[in-house]
Length: 574
Image 1 (cartoon, rainbow, N blue to C red):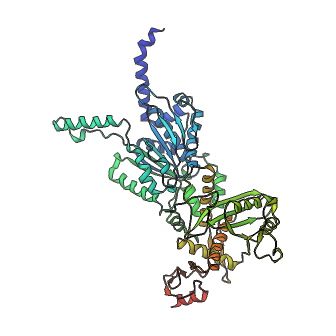
Image 2: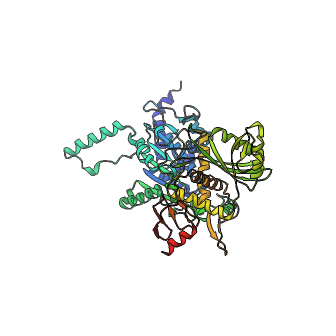
């Protein structure tokens, strides 16, 4: 055995300690040397504040690597601080696993990171984690991605020193404050801090030290990232609170806020053609949020973003893959024709309120494949009525449904006289989308939303990849709704469409079909339903209540739950 190794062990240990100290003081250098990561200039600036600040909010443009930055920060903390616990959280387990997948890429790239770990990254049904090797003096570090759930129940009791939240705007504020924030209640080496405070208090009592001599030990950290969003969301309130703290604390502040637009990326970092295509197909507001990291007051379309948010907050249900016993459902379908067809599918559970519980967009499927998907939904849910656009492939799907395609029970059009007497489910209703119908359907949907008689689901609680993927469709539905604007022709016909050609709206169309259908069934049953008539001027909660128009006029109307355009005009005049 080489005795000289023992002679030099102290030197080697000293050099190792100095190197760790250097890397702790320069995370950019650590990322380069330990993880083989070359960061863009703006990423280096952001990483330093992620590293040295206790609380940071980073709003970054699409493509600038906010999720990647969270992964780099997590890996470096676990590497350089033995016994460190890092929690990765997002609005869905699927998104949390995206952060973890970036950690896994770093693991694959860096031999030093692989050597520091106990084993390879592990993906489980309710967690994904990377376990580091422990030392003689500390427990092992680990990085863990967890599902959030509707109320955060799945993650209660977890404890971390660094909490990283992606898609901050989509994570409910009450879960952040009541569930996630307590994750950081425990400190790194808690008893060491207790003893330190005891020693300092004793010195102060003896006059040997002052309060100013107490070294402020770093508190646990919460780093949050997101794309741009609307200012009515809790993220904007947090950003303003951080800015106030930064102003009050000055250079010693523990807070940081970044808004990083795509223009701050170095030349060649982003694909210019992709940005041009995004500008062409996205609404201006959507582009500003996604690529310019902007915070917007509200949307300017027919369906306001604040309205959709209000109809989501407080929802105690999420996406479902099948119906519940005793519940009734309607299905809205917006089909398109062709060899590679597509359609939007929306299932609404009828009740008070009505609930959007299934959203799916089918892309590049044949008419036969779409028919099978519709049949499958009628089997899984107690669908009492299907409302389908008669155009764009609707009639072709109708024919397959009525013939009982693939040996399924025939689904028959309630208005088809030729099918009278045939066995099957008489639940299909084709809708001819005339300009008058489109106007009625949009205002009916708006009325349901304004009266909170139609609600959106919240994030899935199961951690199911299927449910979380469908929940992404809910976000896409909202995005399509926000793009809808209303214009009027010279003849007074209202036109509902996206501001730019090429913007998809199949889910939005399926929703107004289902929502209009839900109201039609209520009317057939003689129930009082909220109304916002196609005049756009009045709204009715129940017979005998007040109509309120957009200009602030109000007038008591007694009797019918349906309002004519003439009533609306009179209400405005008076």
